[in-house]
Amino acid sequence: KKLCYNRIPFENQHVVTLAIGHTCILIDHWLHMTTTGQYFREFWRKTVRYVQNYNLFHSIPPSTDKYDLQNQRISTWLFICFLIFSLVILLLYNSLATVSITETIKSPSFDEYEQLYEKYPQTLTCPCKKILIDYEHILDIHYELHQVCTSTFITNAWFIYLAHPDQNNKISYRDFRWLGSSTFQALNSLCQLVHQTILDSRQQFLYNQYISITVTSRNLFEFQLRTFVQQLKSSITNNFVFSLDLVRNSTHTNGLYSALDTNYRLFLVVSNTFIESGPIMYPKNCPCEVSPTCSGPLAIYNFSDSTPVFVVPGMHRACYIIEALLQSTLECFYNHACLQRLQSYILSEVPIGITPLNAALKSSYSINSTIKQLLDQLMIEEWTWSSHYEQYYNHCRPVDLTASIGLLGGLVTVLKVMIPLLVQLQQELNFKRSHQNPSSDMQWRRDITK
Image (cartoon, rainbow, N blue to C red; front, side, top):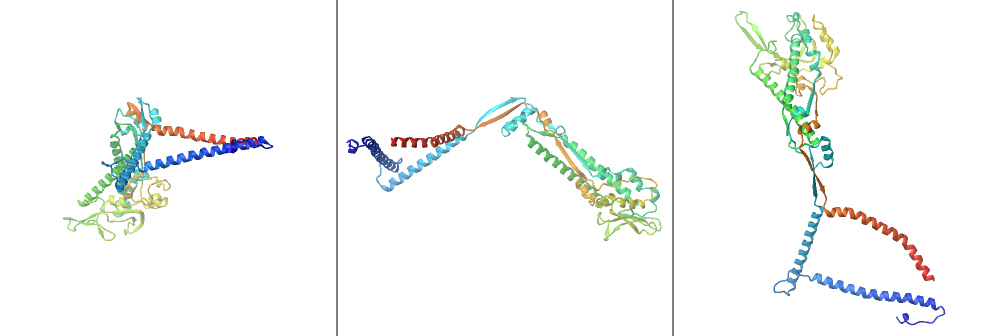
């Protein structure tokens, strides 16, 4: 250290003095750092010792037992940890808590409601002045039946064409020319019954009222109406099929005679004093007194010996016309060649133009679907509905519109603002430091050289 205070003569005295000056500064800095380091190490040891021996649960009187003291220190640390943990949770809760403000608009228009709903879909409330709205104002329901219900085959011209009176005394009771007209009249009745049932049920449904205390969102509104329409269709179908089955079962249970001799035949006894009856026997030894669904193929029979000359594809005869119709298909009436051959056996004096059913037309059914399968779906090809949300809103006539706007807690807001700024500031400092260090090093080297 004496070197720092004694001047040593030398030829280049200026250089030596500069070197000794730098050396003295370094020695003084090292001594200062050594003293400061020892001070901090000593402070750290005292702090650690104090923390290790910190005790909030002193016994009265104070205990000197090591085991008791250790338990007290453990309890102290557990207490501190749980306290810090609770404070952290409380801080996070208060920091993340949502602060809400409310915005109210009197008599809002539909466009205002739509705009605010896009921004605040979860908190928007809009009480309705009118909470009961008829469905007919907000819902349209349309349907389309199978094409046979609008075809020539359910017109009076076709019925008369098949039931020409000159043929009735010449043909068999099993012949298409005997049963055909009644079969298609029954089909026409079913089409009309289905159509009227749907109309009545739809009108009754539309007279009901949609209930909403507050304005229903568009998505929920359409979902609810879709569900209601599906329930309506299912209800109409189930009720119709149930009623039809009830009529069929009642007819068979009561043993009603068919006017077309399809279930029982009446026989006049030789003495002409009384009449006997017997059930018609269908293929597979199925008598009508056992089951009303006994059936056989419907055909054109020879006048002379009653042998079948043409079996009409898909058509059946049964104990009752309705049972025969339910088991029949319309496949022959899609085929122009089949229709031409069928017409060749019908000696009718009434001309008629027949257009086959269109097999290329888009349909929910196949050409081989039975009438029973069509009726199980109410013969509906297409069932469509449309909702009118704006009309619903106008009928609702909301009094006011309230939107709760949520703001995040203070800490989250501050962090979102401050963190990007701090990162940007750090990046700028790094950039400046990287450009300043090379010039500092060069300046220091110039000073040493001097």
